[in-house]
Image (cartoon, rainbow, N blue to C red; front, top):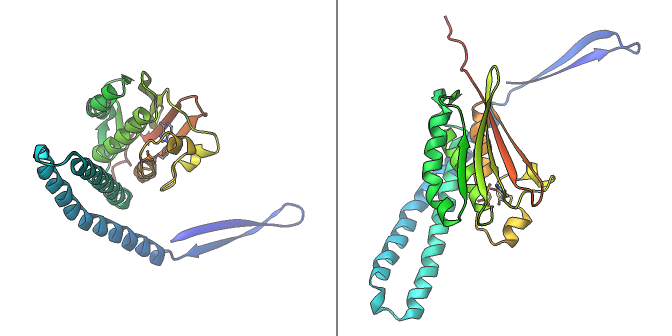
Length: 260
Ligand code: ADP
């Protein structure tokens, strides 16, 4: 049930009662779940044939010596595009399940940061980007380690992808009474003020990213936002064109009190 309430105030500003509207949103929630299930099923069905295309081209290219160079070149283009399609399908299926499958528990964010940096190391080295973290260990939060790990992977991988060679990507942390924050900062192309909320919408990509021919589907940040909000947390983007970006995730430090 969704609830909306408004006070009734007389001409002198005195309180005269209230109007409360209860709306049954069962149909809407069911439609949303069905929609997400459909996307999830369709993307799952796409994976098998795509993997078969990629695997078979791999086999043919292994023996590329016997192929005319033109044919080998065209096969590599097909393979690259099949891989892009597979990545898009993986993003779509993640975006369908992100909101539905969050299982938070007491989790050390410092060890998630370490894992994320470990898996981003190769991508960073290729782009000559320095990775660093200043996070106290342990740093406890009420989080689903799989999902928040996925959110951190997205933020760090974007930070590397949208930074020029020689840049820096750093992760820092802050903790308040009942919340914990992780920030991922980069020295990259930045995001204009108007775009800094749009980047969380499905399929949105900045003009700068497209002009620089950096590939992407515009899904990662919408998935990241769904994951964070599925924890009762928030995500914000602080940036300016050409000024680098900082994405900050705020999560609850503790779960609900035990019920007796
Ligand atoms: P993708 O990177 O696949 O396009 P995302 O949803 O992760 O999709 O990001 C949406 C858009 O936000 C990107 O296309 C890019 O324009 C912008 N963006 C995301 N992260 C950064 C960043 N760290 N620096 C600059 N732009 C970014």
